[in-house]
Image 1 (spheres, helix red, strand yellow):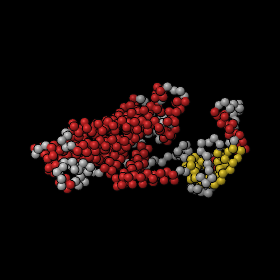
Image 2 (spheres, helix red, strand yellow):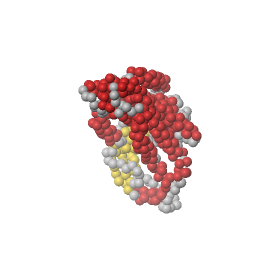
Image 3 (cartoon, helix red, strand yellow):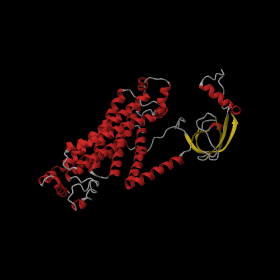
Image 4 (cartoon, one colour):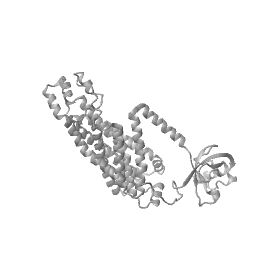
Amino acid sequence: MDHTDHAHAGPAQSTGHSHSHHHGPAAPVSKHLRKVIAAVLIPFATAVVVGLVVLWPGGAPAHERSGVGFDRQTQQGAVVSLAQVDCKSVNASQVPATGDTSTPQGREARAEQTGECKKATIEVRTGPEKGRTFVEIVQPGAPRQLANGQEVVVAYAPDAPRDLQYSVIDVNRKFPMALLAGIFAVAVVLVGRMRGLFALIALIISFGVLTLFILPAILQGSNPLVVAIVGASAIMLIALYMCHGLTARTSVAVLGTLVSLMLIGLLGSLFIDWAFLSGNTDDNTGLIHGLYPNIDMSGLLLAGVIIGSLGVLDDVTVTQTSAVWELHQADSSLGPRGLYKAAIRIGRDHIASVVNTLVLAYAGAALPLLLLFSIANSSMGSVANSELVAEEIVRTLVGSIGLVASVPVTTALAALVVSADRAAPAGAAASSGPGRSGGRGRRRKR
């Protein structure tokens, strides 16, 4: 498994200084330890492959279009002309019958009644009715304003009257999104070089597992938790080994990640059930439940917790494993206890930053929701008790507990592996005398 780790043998033999190779790859582990690691990981990898084969969905199941939300037929279109018109002339809105403008709705209606609207002519650019045009009235207070020549996404409702079959539902932002993705890819490859390229390939494969396996398998009715565990394990194995090499160091990181994912799954299952979280809290989850009533929505929530925690877990476990390996190379006299104590100090700094990152990421995603509670002058207790916020709290805290646990677990595993691997040679090296004679001991170890 450590075929790349022998590259330092030459330089190590050319000098007697025991620290001449600190910045190179980790020293190879013994054949015995490689067998032990393989005995654990090969059955695990086999089980993941079997799980992928057994649960493979073969595509998302077909369903009758509901015409609601994202479940609409869409085509591409473009604004071919734009004209200013009086809102009153096109009956874009009406003032409330009472004439009451003290309410937000009344004031908005009054502004729209007296303001200037835009009359946009939209041409359908794709689909069987390519070339057809329709008119869209854009009110002055609308959050999405249209410009001449702008590309848009239009919804098609075949059962509606002909004049109302098409409507603009979004703008086409594919080009800026693709450009941003290209800049990201170039930056990763320029800085990371071959390692960055492999990371991008692993990212594409991860999205492939998500879209071709995890999502369709859940829609087919498979248990979301089982699907998430199999899919997350496949992503973990592919991403870690592709990015960090087929080494014992990576294998220890895989084991640490696996233990932490199991803990997150157990805690998530316990607290989602205990807190009676249904996973059906907004229009999108309600639409999913309406279209596929057999999906376990609370299981879907738990699957999201596991997959969402995986990316940060990989980072923590790889960092801790690398720290233990580097510390051992810097001072081979450190035993498992000494290695653990030194590496756990690095881990504590990592925990503090990662947990803060997770909490702020979830808070940022839920900012509009939190703002609504603030406007309503709701107490912190009532905010936390609402299912929408409680879901995010459970998601954040369960994921954070798994991250915190991954540091001591991975550090202990790495310290035990690297120390057990060197126990016999270290004794042989010690017999030749302490201090600077360690360089000869290292040559014998290789």
